[in-house]
Length: 613
Image (spheres, rainbow, N blue to C red):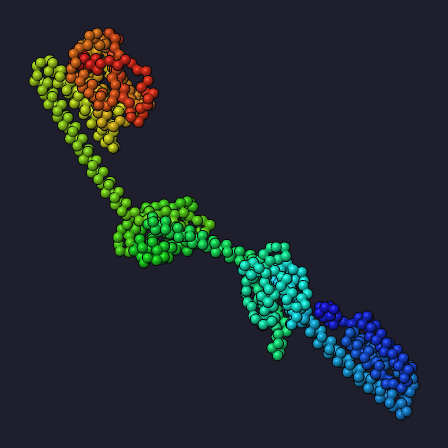
């Protein structure tokens, strides 16, 4: 019977089986008394019943033992003693035996009752201890000294060790288990912690042990062991416990690896931040506190160490002119959950104003905003100086252009004065041509002054103004300008192109139409994929069949077309007008295919200007 079953037997109330068992013991005693009396008459009267009462008290309980004593005593008195039990004094001895039997039965019943209570208490304690031991969440065992027999083991032993219950006759049998040395070989019996505790009394706490199960899998165990001693200090048993810590060790290893990766990432981040002269900041949206790393703190003149301060105090570093805008930009990023970017001035502890670029991201699930900051004071200083220099240069260039325009106007005024005092017709024509050229240059400079960069000219505006001015030379002829809008050209090529247009227009107005004849001249400008095409077409008398001599106009047009890399082509027939085409390739758009493009026949440039000459 196990401790738990015996405890249950002692603690339950007696039933009919217990009474039957007790009466049976009494009956066996009475039968034994009859057999003994038949063989050797005159024996003790009630002694034979006392063991039966004692056994009934131990195994059946106090009430059945009393019932057995009463039934046995009465039966014995009626059967064996008869009426002599009532006689006095001849049967005084029987009366005394009866009295002693009653006293002995009372003593036996009391003693067995106390024994049952003590046994029940001990069995209950033993059962509780055994149950608690079996429920230990690990492999646990108690070995009895000195042979090492297994007294008790936990229910988790099989799942941890993968071993069935082994009844060890000696401690050496434990060598059959799968403990491993660091080199992978099996442990000897004396190397196991529980055996060391059993033989030497060693106390083992948290010893790590590698263990191979019968299925070949290897686990990590954490082992505890200790000896159990009696009152004299002799080792009577050893207790050992082993816990599977494989998952814990694996988690710790992963945690160590993760921490190592995080440390390496943090080091790389710190190195990158240091290389980029960046600082880190973090705002807790719940506490409204700002955390600065050592680099950012040093930028503000604070001690070179991480610091935490309220947001209101952090905002106090913002320049008064940027304070409200900075707070608005930050609050807007938090409200939208988007990225935060700002460039502002901050006043350091030493009252120095410096420029900072701040970038960050809102982590809504963490209620934080994190980001980086860089000191861009030197960059802003260089940019401001560069901007000032550019502004000064633009002012100088505009002033220079203004002076050039005034100078050109002065030249035109002087030429017109000269026209007034010259009587020779050819001289007057030459002076008028010079005035036209100077005014064309003035138109180009005027258009240049109206541009934002003072480097390029919008051709449609320049040519429109040129047509308006040149049209005043012959009011009977209508001049129309049809130029693509938004075509820009650098001044180095736009001004010569304007002079070429002025020469051709002037020539058409003065020579394509007889005196007083009406007509029309159209200037067209188109942007092509490979460059520009300018066409000046009139409906006048056309070019003469015999070319005239080469003059200044021819020289000017030839030189200017060569200067800008252009080609001049003329188509003309008597009384069918003249068409002058100027094609200019732009280097970025020029291709080999352009050389194969169909175009009108190219004639000598002198034909363009022969009438002007």
